[in-house]
Length: 358
Image 1 (cartoon, helix red, strand yellow):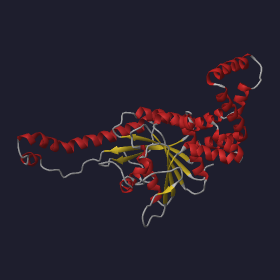
Image 2 (image 1 turned 90 degrees about the horizontal axis):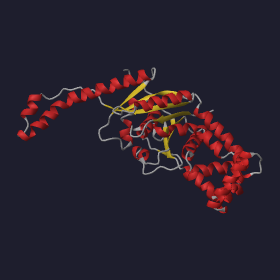
Image 3 (image 1 turned 30 degrees about the vertical axis):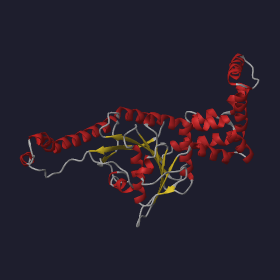
């Protein structure tokens, strides 16, 4: 079971998910918690949002200034280093050295589909049970990959199952085994004995760590379904991809994972006024060529009001389509978020503050 609370931010690309993850982390840190935020997006947006030069595979302190009662750390996943650390934990030094030098291991850890997602949940597990944090916040890849994130532990257990390769390379009987070995012999003639030897050596070495990896994978899978692990669905107020969010909500519910609510970004504020007199604006135009500019300026407050109302109506519909759910409306910030100060402008609109009343 997780020693820390875990928050996983999911959503389609371009919805401000990375910025939201960072702001959510800052909000909890300012509330007095020890918080760490992990991004598995290889882009450097999280470092930019936190005002840092770079992020590493090791948590890096984010200075919160005087008077802060909590703490904030951030890191970016390096899947190769996370794989190596996992192997070193479960293997003898000799086996770990031989495995890390194996070409097939290097391919698995850097290029295999699902490897990145599994190392993300492995790193999440490491942070959650470390005892150093009250809350771990995870920025996931765009939502088309989030199902892979959920299923990564099961996939990796299958990949590292030595019994599978024993059946392929061993001397088992039956028509299926014979056909499989016949296929492998064709692959060997094409790829060469060296490649097949690397694969055999990989699975021989994995035999030592396989029980530990399977046990860890089961613990990671349990963490993703632990009630202390909650999932946020992040949306852009203008985005048309809400059906994707509802699809992923269905997936969360099917996987028996705790849905926390919707975080809707870039919401237009309802303009409050007072606004300049339209006739005065038009009269101030320096010439006929500026008349159209004046008309645009006069129309801006009403356009902003319509956009703000549309954002709230769409959010209400999203909540209804989801069968009822809490929602937080996060305001649009002109110029985007590029600093910790900018992130701080979002924290009053995010948990642990109450949800928005629609």
